[in-house]
Every structure is written in structure tokens, then in C-alpha cells.
Image (cartoon, rainbow, N blue to C red; front, side, top):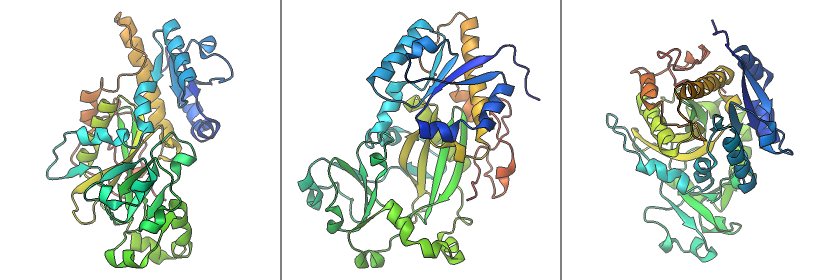
Length: 374
């Protein structure tokens, strides 16, 4: 039974229209209201400080003006929590700096290893056509991504490049990332404060050496999907991708990575994409990190986010009651010890996603890794 709220809390949200439409569903609003939390839309045409007070501000807007408005709000309402701090979010806008934090993590887990694929920044056109200037170990096929990852449509345009001819339409600065064969399965790990959920999705199929010799140029990720439309209508395609049979990564291993990233990046709302190297079954690569992803795609996201809101506002109240002055952002590392209690020795099976996800604070036996059915 939900706790009866002693008072109501105001959480303002400032999101782009598309994000707002997908995230702020009536089901989320209703669950939050039942817990004494009112989700309030922030009018971006008005000064933020004039719309307070807020117990918390949830946002995915960028720019110096918005950052200044958040600072003004914090100055006037020092007890308000900002999720997350703009400076912490900014490192994810660059595809090199976003993955550097992965390389800095030190996690040892029963022989399982992780890292990032070989990658290099191409900042001049001549460098694209001169593989001798590439990083050692980087060879075709490669994934070409814009260096800037600011959530815009342009930043999502990616190519799978098979040979030199595939670079004709690319304009630096771009990032070339090694394409690692991974069995056509990608693991998307969602982090919501202390909560970690891993799901599996279909990904790009493997590219063999033999097949690579017959491929030319490049294809966009959307074209990859289009090229396999007929196959996708055939059950053979899904069997070929082995999604149902794909083994989930070890729960403790993924949770430890999530905890490490949250602490290092000082972020509470993000997801990261993980692939398993087809050549070495216990080697994993983190290939992308996104701030405030599409949580509505996550099973029972309303319960997870509502519990997160509850934890945030009550933690702030606790600090104020103790006479402490909370900083502008929510400290992502403060619950590291509690988050480790999530880890258990078992992984979820295919049918485990029927259970209602709840906050790890309220039910520590909750298994945070689940399978998302397509």
C-alpha cells in the first residue's frame, strides 16, 4: 500500500515537445499524484524563477540561457533539486568524452571484461581517405557518427561504412567507431537513480569477412532496416537474429557498470548500449550513452519513475531537516552503497518482465535486469 503523503510535492518538467509527449503520459501523472507528487509543465516562454517554487526540476533543455535560469532558480530556492546538473549532461554531447568515462572504470567480475570499441575523431576530409592515419586496429567495416550528440535529428544520422567509397558524403567532424560483430543483439541498460534495468533488442546483423568483400559504399542505419524489410516479415529473420536465445549479461556485472557510470558522470537519468563480442563471449563493449532516454519504452516505467521522484523529494526534505544545504544537482553517488544491495546472483528469465518494478529502496530483492519483448 502506498504511503499517504504528508504534503504535496511540486516537480516541474521542461522537455522538448516530442519528449514531453512520449514521457508525460497520463498513467505517469496519475501514479505520481497518488504519491503526493504533482508534475507541472514549465512554460519555456516565461522565466523559470517566476514559476517556482519547485521541489525538483526535471529537464532536457540545453544552452547558456537555460543554464542561467536554472542557476537563478537555485539561488532563489536553494532547496530545489535539479535533475540533472547541466555541466554533467554536457559531457554526453560529445561522442568521445561520453565514452571516456567507460575506459576509466575499474570493475572486475569473474572474467567478464568490458571496454569501448576502437574509435577516432576525423576532423579533416583528407583524414577520411587515408587509413594510415587511423588508429591502429580500426578497419572496415566502421560506423560513422557525428561527433556532436545533442539529441538533434542530425546527431542521429549514422552510417555503416564498408569501404572507402562509403565516405564520399561524409563531412567532418565525425567519429569512426569499430564495428564489432555482436550476434545481432544489443543490450540497452536504463538507469533511473538507483534503479537499473537491462533489456535486449535486435541490432545490426554481423558482417563476415566474406560478406564484406561483396559489399560496397555505406548504408544508413535506417536503410539497413529498409533493406531487410522482406526478411523481417519472415520468421527465419527473427530466428537468425537469435534474440529469444540470446543470453543476458551477468546481472551483477551490468549493475556494477551502471553504478560506476552513475557515480563518475554524476547523472541519474541515462541509458547505455552494450554489445557482446561474438568472438569472445565474455567481452562486452559500451558503444553509446544517452541522457534522459525514451523511458516510456521501458516496461512499467511509470512505477520506476514515480519511485525515483519520491526518493528525490524525500531525500531533499531529510537534508533540510538536518540543517544541511543541498546543492543544485542531485548527488548521483550518494546512494552508491544502497544501490549495491540490488545485486544478486540470479539473472532474469524470459518471463520475468511481468513483475511490477519498484524502487530498490522499498524492495531490495527486486531483480533489476529484465527482458523487453518486442
